[in-house]
Length: 343
Image 1 (cartoon, one colour):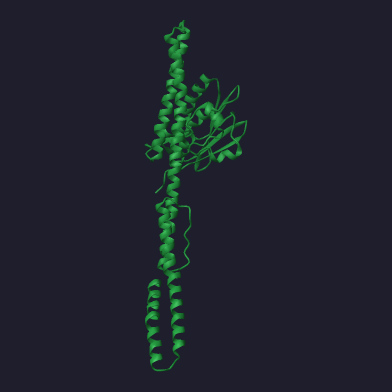
Image 2: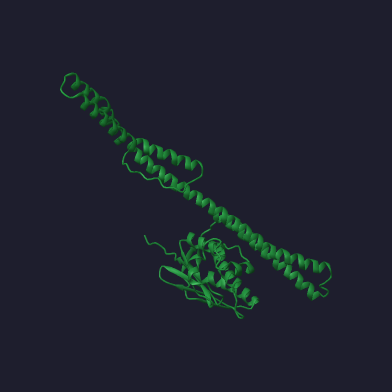
């Protein structure tokens, strides 16, 4: 009600003061020139008050509204008064800030979407080109022996699998972006679950000529609540990332599972190229690539580790990385153990 009070005071001054001056003049109790001087002075003070309290803030709001209409959100609106107009100005400034944040988020989302399409298009082009080349070789009779034909067909099959994986990753990303990941939580025995994963990964690493080590130090009774399919995606994405950036003649990957009280900790390590210290905190960001030129030759949409982070956090866990550049990378994540509540 501060503005109402001001307007009431202004009304009183603008009406009562002239009447008082008129009365004093008619009764001969003051000088006419003095009356005029007082009236003009009071009028000047009143106009200044009206301008500073009402007209100037409203004019600033009008200019700010025009800027927003023209798409300009790079300005600041400050309030000098603690009245209704001042509160209106503060609300207007808060609206501007939120509009600017929304605009920046939209621009960032559009940029990320374009980058995703560019990455996927680049990564799909590589296997498609290979499939075309080997298919032409088969049609032209280049693969003249059964062994060569089998080699060509295996390559075509593997490249088709790469394309399928990229499309699946893109589909999964769209679910993450709209928070529509289908979780099916169950009680999982930690030892049995990771033993099963390790057996599958071990066979795959053997076929790739990569050493694999597995160490599970969790008791046979320890359980977690998790989605087995999504947790397997976490492990496979991390291992696949290690394989992708393996730059040693003899690669090695290890998985270690330990019991640390209320949580189980899983450490997945490799002896690949590693990550620079300044990049460690950003490797889980969507589309972040530590070395654009290196990544462009190895493929990848740039969302694999962001998917991993999202799944672990949705399980109530935590994930982080450690690395020595040139020596390898380790990804660590925690999952809370399931415990029966005694009533």
